[in-house]
Length: 208
Length: 212
Image 1 (tube, protein in one colour):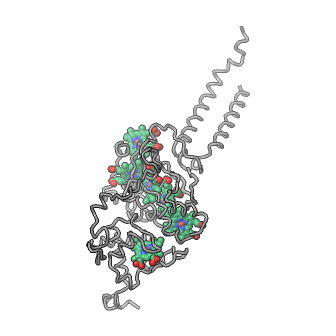
Image 2 (cartoon, rainbow over the protein chains, first blue to last red; image 1 turned 135 degrees about the horizontal axis):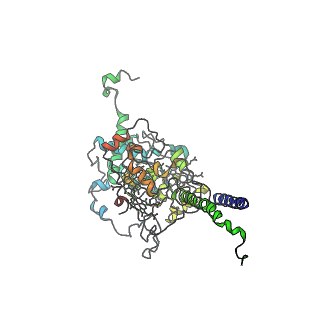
Image 3 (spheres, helix red, strand yellow; image 1 turned 90 degrees about the horizontal axis):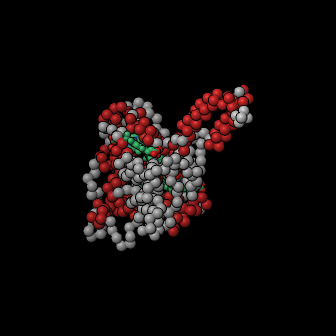
């Protein structure tokens, strides 16, 4: 019996050590895709965004489709007015924000600006975001007189289509968010244009 | 006759009585430890076609997650950024780097980069990003500390038990909505219980919440 115990326990210990050393502990890194233990209905033949479709209908295999040439989505067809284009019917820029500029809109604009614009234009619009330290050249300073005088619609258009070295942001900001960003850019500009006389008396005394 | 069963076989029942429980318990322990998403999924770190690093972009440079994963607030699906998103910066930043060759090719040809998907719930589970990130649930609870990863690895099990742990007690995890993408946020005095009550946060626990 003793002999049996010795054999049995050493084989058992060897087996445990082998399994643990082959399988590793929880949380170890692995290049291999996870095992699906009971893969019953885990992966169904349906389309997920951004995958290869596995569906004979699409020659390029992409499950996320681009618009076929010459077509317009119903959404964009419905909204070809000033709010969606930044242009008036005669093609001139819309002068002022067509949305009503409320504190809520500016707050939204600030949040979006900080995410999408600040990496290049800087939190305050000085054109000194972190990318400029890594070779991003020619980033516009939003406090330029030219940009202050620019119509709101043209800034909207820059966000939609980009300009020269700046790439478009239409895929990241829906039209209403673009107007919110325009409103916030205006708020940043105004913040630099204030005169000393406009500061409330109590605060003015503390200014240097 | 006496040779068919040698003498030692008399001890077989005793040997079995000793061995069976040990083997049984070992098997149970092994299965509990290994046959669970905590082992099978956590740590999955596929090799990606481009050596993109979240530790650089989201950590060191502090880019907001939404700059790239911009669908996360408005849809169930958190998109992987298109190549043009990378080119916003890399048209000028490190524009000759070898590591970015595939990005430039993809931008020129329109052929998407084939990133390997890491997190994946089974298709019979309904998951939705926007309901979570608009209710003060941060990426970090479900994806781990992405901003420190050079290569993304699966950090949480994403099993049914994992989802329910939070659905039962959201007050332990909830945070102010504008801090959802600040993964290193530490709670100093934010009252989760009050937020859950005031915002009427009620994550469903019935089966049809997630299996619909």
